[in-house]
Image 1 (cartoon, rainbow, N blue to C red):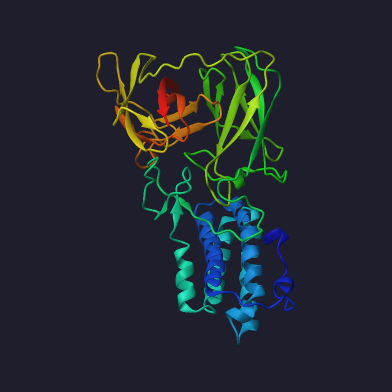
Image 2: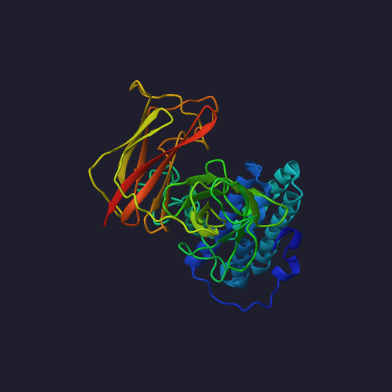
Length: 420
């Protein structure tokens, strides 16, 4: 890695690397990888998320090695100068990493300036058209929930309505990172005692890479004010919990508490966005119990629910919901007198969260209202919020709406039938 475990300049400048011709399209791709790394470094320093800088090490190292191996093809008559510029750039990133690891914001800003200057000198070795092609890799974004949807950062996903806020990362071959669609994090949960109805229990969530390396908070992208959302439900899809575990002293270990209202084990989906791809994953695992859980028996389609004196209703734009077809709908909340309720409080930067569990007890969906994040804690919302759903699996879905009123979460259950 660069920084505390950086690659030494003399290793990068090794002139014994086999020489080969690197196609111009691959030159643009490699430079695009470096450009994306620099873009991320700027974002991390700007947002004061210094601990995330180490996530760029593998991509930077692989891209730099590829460019080094083809230095003669990139800068035919100036390969020595090119190698020196590349070495200097990597050294500057290493210096930034070192001060970032010490959580020194001011020094990180200074070192970032040196990184940008060094990168400008490195880019000067490439033809103008290669630099322009590499720039294109900074302008392609994807939906974190639907990775096949790509566009500009200002676009919205036509399937779920979320903004395309995740840079579509270019990864080096043989980098060790899972490709899009592959699970990159594994989850497990241990408890202080088997689950018992009505008894609170302390649970420990363990997150690991396939290599066994622990997943730290700095390895995850924050979504709706949290880096880990735990979606927890029993086998009857009745007792739903939304928890946010906190890290313990052990790397990759996170603590949370749970008081089950139903017998049997519970299933947990850790809703996360791991670096470097930043795409949403659901790492699924079980919380064990000494008792047997209840089966799913209530599969009634239900678009209305009454909870704690308020009425909740889902209003769909069409009568049927099918797999792979986006459908718009509204969540409307009214008080006992029939008037629209307008005192919803911000909850994780929005006025409502919808979480659905399919009858297969494997497929889960996490939906948010359309619109910008709600960052003002004094803001209030309602009575209607607009959503969009694009289900991936047919069958019955238990959907829970979570809102916050007077500092307390309320959960309204619904029943949907998804057609093939």
